Image 1 (cartoon, rainbow, N blue to C red):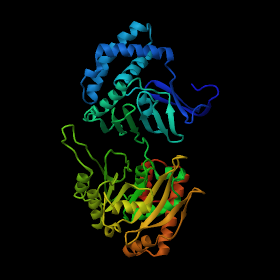
Image 2 (image 1 turned 180 degrees about the vertical axis):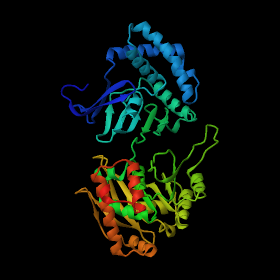
Image 3 (image 1 turned 90 degrees about the horizontal axis):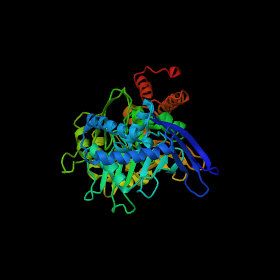
Image 4 (image 1 turned 90 degrees about the vertical axis):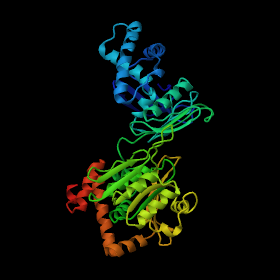
Length: 487
């Protein structure tokens, strides 16, 4: 627990099975980063030390590293076998345990060997976005949604334990990490993305970086309530999506690009076929949508069986899609196919690493993507997300139209001083395109935007944050069955 002079910033509890864990976040006078202190409430420090002794004896008896198992059934068989061994050791060292306590201690030891130990508890904390192991000499770090980067009180006992965790994660999805192949990108069964490296590639020790999969998908309500986007900006994006204007979401690492892609997917109509393509599935679209999610696959250790982003983009075009969602544009050929899809009447929504609208077009038109500027005009809107690393706030930085010459023209811009999104100019090209294809006048477009803003305000006022509920509201809107008073 924190020292007497430490300033407590936050505290809460999380539960993993029958383990009750207390989290206290505090700042020490001799530290410059807050501490994330994890303690298991229903296991005393003395008992924990004894359990570590039992765990070590258990490892020497069972030789866990030699066990081979596949799938959930195999893991359950191994667990049952190990439960008997652990029960014998518990009886040897701790006599007269009641059944509930015995089950608690057995599950704790199994988690330390078949699972990821204390990392599993961190994975259960919905407040965390990132979990980072930098080696056995450095504490585990976490990125907290509210408090940013924090040091934890968790230490890896040795480099072998980190390597064991990485090997176990890779084995579950048919990948391996070895001295000859010391880099690994993988994912947990929960969808959390994992990157691992081995020494000496990472100089200070073996590493693991886990980016957590959001248990609850972000919605437009969450974004507006968090001041990430404004009602007016959201209404403009909705108008664009309703009228099938292709949109690119740009931003730096951790700025919320994928979350934004999920949010704008709230606005899709129910009568169109949507295909999403990701390296690891992170999107969750409303139940009412006609949605086919697809994932890439890396080759196995023999270099076979890989399915690339390009493979899936080309394949998606043969599935009569109305909308195509792509996790991230990285390479020239992917971009060429996607822009060709835009030119042939498909609506495309994707993310790209770029810090502003101008940089987005520069990235698209220069190596390695290198798309001719003449085709960029097929893209209608660029939505730029930004994360302030000092404050941790995520905001929509810009919304820009793409002119007929392929240049970005910012129409909405974040005023950093007031922390508000402000209209820079009217969305001229968007209005022109809508007038050309729908016949809507500028007055009718503004009336439509005002109606969408009112609907969004009602959704936020009722605090509707479930993606499927919002999907139902949108389905009613598109089919003319929505009564705004009934939201």
